[in-house]
Image 1 (cartoon, rainbow, N blue to C red):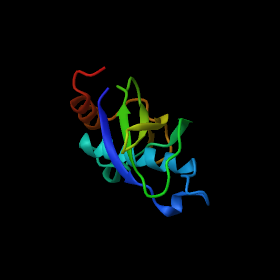
Image 2 (tube, rainbow, N blue to C red):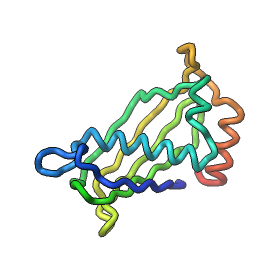
Image 3 (cartoon, one colour):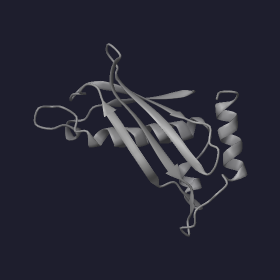
Image 4 (cartoon, one colour):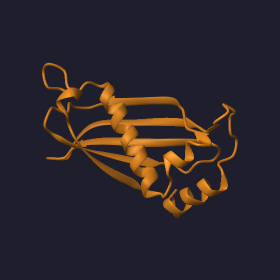
Length: 138
């Protein structure tokens, strides 16, 4: 798998009174990772969203350790090779110092048209960019 790294500085607003990151923020970080991966693949979500939406249809995470206020975390994001108009992403979140694994996750996204219709085939221009990004990686 080809992993794209996104560095995130933990903000005070993401933490509970004990300065531990609230679990819901990991899903925000996953989204940041997806956007960075799309950017690395040459896909503009802003342009794509004029015609296609990618709603989350399944998302999950397993937490291993806690991130805390002031730390820097690395979100690693990978895209599995799509077989239909579904995109499956994998995530790993590490504390930058010491590279301690904090969480893993995955999400599945269905492609729908801006009119709400399910898309069954990834548009050719998007598929070409995904193929170029993934190369021979399976």
